[in-house]
Image (cartoon, rainbow, N blue to C red; front, side):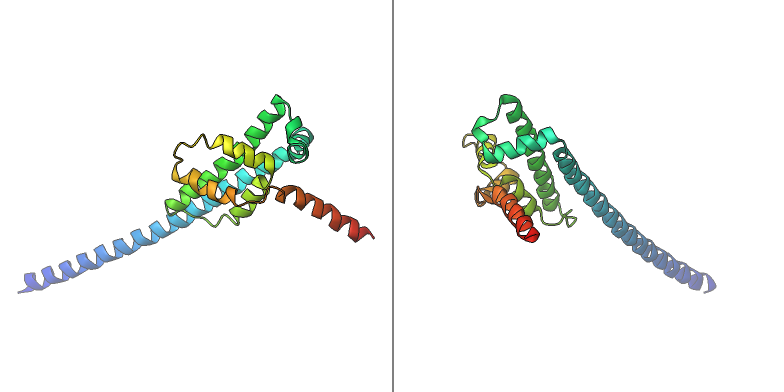
Length: 173
């Protein structure tokens, strides 16, 4: 009889141990998920900062502004700079969309605003049309980007800068 009681207590203790272990695993999984989201957010922020750091190079900034104001006058070297510049933006958004589909959205902010800034102009929209191909079926990620880019006004980026200048001029008066 005492052995039977001992077995029941051991069985109960074993079940409690299993439940406690499962709770600890769940807590650790939640911590890992939070850490993964933090790393993804950090990586996305770093990628955006690198895009903006590139713009601090006066030569690159000049080429980007030329693509907004006189895109037909771009040299082959300048076209290559713009190609790399826009490809970096596309890859950043592809990464974001793929991570979202995997359930790893880490609240990257307002990515559509960033996309609008880079693709709200005639040069970028023309580049995009060439980049995405000649009618071949795009993957889901490119299709999602295509839908967003197609809706952008091609004068948005230059109007943003003109509006900024107007605001600064009116603030001085």
